[in-house]
Image (cartoon, rainbow, N blue to C red):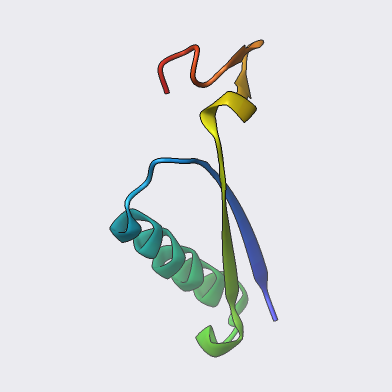
Length: 63
């Protein structure tokens, strides 16, 4: 059973997260031939104050 864990900065819409789940599922299905019913995708949202980019928080960078 393939399992994909995706980390995103908070703020995506439900539709965007749905699209990520659908497209990651399809990519794993195509890449490894796993039946879609066995593929799991977990999106973990991270506050922009907890996400560092080049020594700054994503919040400080306006993301």
